[in-house]
Length: 218
Ligand SMILES: [Fe+2]
Ligand SMILES: [Fe+2]
Image (cartoon, rainbow, N blue to C red):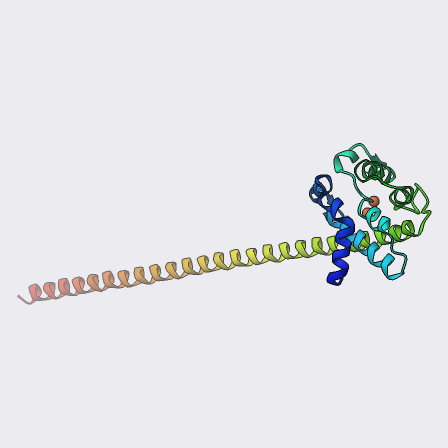
């Protein structure tokens, strides 16, 4: 995105981006990233597509930026057959966005229909169609990237663990080797000691025999 384009996106969205309620979305986890990042990514792509198809409208970018304007605590009881109940978050997001940033009819339809073709509102304008597609593309990219990161992290952890085990085995092997060398040295020392004792005994025995022989001659 060129500097000029980036500035224009910021101009369109700066009041939303700077609001405390929107900044709080940086703490919300969404597709392995923050909800803030997801919304900005979707809004920037919507901005580019509508601009380059010559259908640019300020409403499209702003609605795209607000399409998931909800918090996790609001979804705590929204479990449907054991999974996240996606059907209610577009309405909650639209209501909050309307209170904070005063939506028009077109923007409301964009937010409320962004989950289409899943049950909910039907897209009724160009911006709604773009947002519906862009949200799915971005979500697929984010979930895919998150999956790759998880697999990479697990593989790295396994490698680190096997390396740690290898080092442990090597240390254990070295310790055992050192023990064996020490035992061999001790055995050799004992053998030398025993041979010295045997030598002394033999000398003493020879002396005794010579003494007996001398007494017999007398
Ligand atoms: Fe959504
Ligand atoms: Fe979304």
